[in-house]
Length: 359
Ligand code: SAM
Image (cartoon, rainbow, N blue to C red; front, side, top):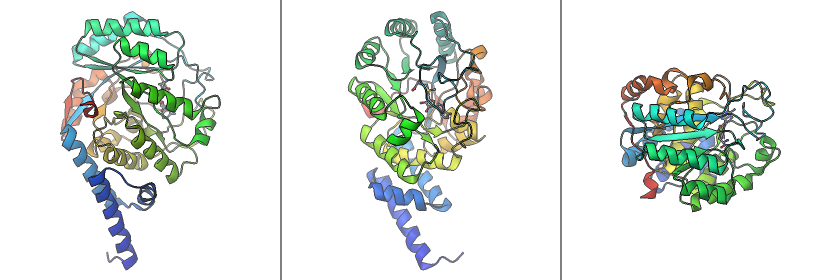
């Protein structure tokens, strides 16, 4: 197809910006905005090839596997998008006992997992003392493992206590860097409190994970630029992003979910802005499209988190509709996961898989 002069000039600018991003690992905000608004399918393929190349430089073809344990779905928070928020009365609440958590880790260790991600709602039952006891016991049983926590906002002193007890990493998505939207999504909370928590985690030496949801209501390209700039400035060791997915029992049930293509574009941009970051192909990505995980990995994502949560509880950690909980998302199907990853041309690394940013 013959291109007009205008199209050719536009195309040249897109390629120039992608090359600049690949070489300098940054762009100005106005350049990022223009790129997001103008990138076409052909240039996306070029961008994805360079984001994959960037991952290969630091992590080769390995994909780290983490065992995810969703240990409580009690939550005191009001996050409008989330199926386990405090207002949802139709959730069957559960909380794993210390023994159940330790048994799950033992099972995970037998399968070969060396990172356990303990994720849950903000459940006041899990005081520092209780979490420290659990983490210390996990570390005593499996000394060569890493423990990641994802239990929401806590005080500086609490994060410090948990770090001393042996927690290695902490995931706390900032959700959106748009302050006004953050307030709409969390009517009783503020973005600055969440950001303060992230800074505290970084200052305490945690490998820290931030991230956002793609396709939130009213989201514009400017909002994505804000999220990307926020991540670039924070320099987190891990970034978790995925599409926002509607949950039928939330007040946001009538807002549509985020899409695959925008999520993939954001993953590629993040890989280039933060070349050494640990970047999961999230369950949400795999839940909106059957080939979401493959496409995420092929453009630079390098972590997946198979679900180790006891099967009886798994369905109740329903944060969005149609969350994948079986088959290739479940730790029992480890061989299937390994085969899948091999078939994409990568291999699974079951080691601790620490961030390369800390060395
Ligand atoms: N309570 C912890 C916290 O606030 O960080 C961790 C649990 S929370 C359920 C984990 C993540 O799930 C959130 O950071 C959010 O980004 C994601 N999440 C919740 N509801 C979602 C939805 N409807 N669609 C996509 N992601 C969602």
